[in-house]
Length: 217
Ligand code: E4P
Picture 1 (cartoon, rainbow, N blue to C red):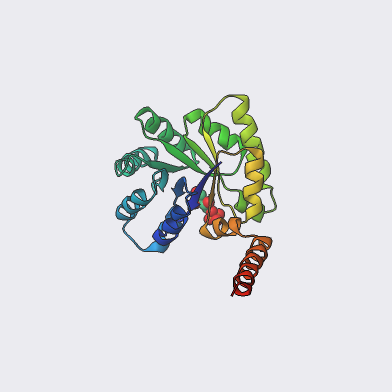
Picture 2 (cartoon, helix red, strand yellow):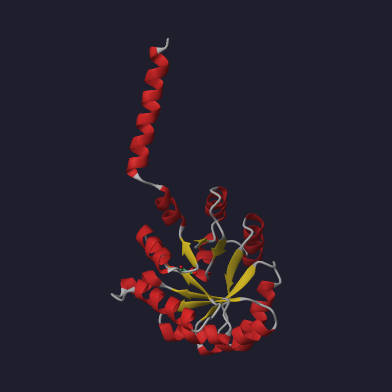
């Protein structure tokens, strides 16, 4: 499973990239707005740090405008994947962009039928938002299972990107199901590494080592 970071923060991206586990970055308009930087310059900076798919979202809502905006974003760097909202106009844009060689990540997916539509339109990536479904008492992970099964049944090559991840168990379950990509906030990436027995074990190894060195003196 590929690991993406869900942020537009350069410091978080640098830190995650330095761990050697980062395959890509997802951004969205809310995350970009939080950074207060010029969008194109920010994307260029991200592309210099991570050599993988970097999702950049359009803010238009008509197909023609999304296509124009998408082409412009894709021209920034070869690794940019254009994020398109899962609405009717969005599907039209995905189809045209694909025909012109621009890859799209179809975002704000909340149902298996939406995912099926996106794959048929030619999405490179589908982004089902599991945390936001859990928030309204629906199982986000059931949606991932449904999409993975449907795509497998019909040999779609659209990649399933698990989005709106809130905690480490989401990552375990996504990996068990066989999702292609999981995008996580920095906090979750950090939580994945930690285990109290690792900390206790390391502390004991180091203190035993110290005692051993002292007894040799
Ligand atoms: C995905 O690409 C989105 O940016 C993201 O995962 C949304 O997560 P949220 O529900 O925590 O805002």
